[in-house]
Length: 159
Image (tube, rainbow, N blue to C red; front, side, top):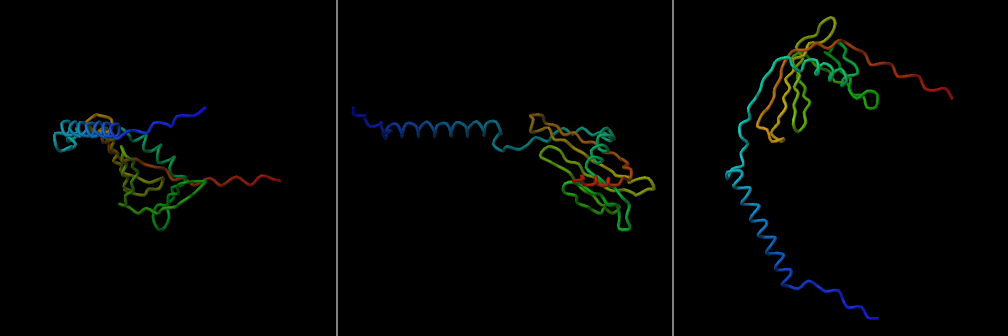
């Protein structure tokens, strides 16, 4: 039994497909221009500002993040990534550090070091524009983290 060769697309089929593809791209481009008003500028979002609403969440988050928070002669030492990949950073009074992703941003500034811990000013914001809402929520406040030391690693198991 002889098999017929598989049909190859004709130049007419290829040309029709290409024409449809170009019309699709042209239509999509027109829609983008119509929706964006020719400029695709983000509208200025409505910003809602609060004070100390996220304070406890910030305290809990930083306490999970930092395995140790210690006073040293150089400043405040914080240890992150414990126990797998510990890194130590030294923060001085008025120094800031950030934690951010595509939608949120947290900025922390070390205000003072006291007998029982460290005082930090925070500003956190969450941008809802990626979710179709033209608003940004911002909260700021002052929190205190108690000094804490990294726990000693457990002894190795006996063989």
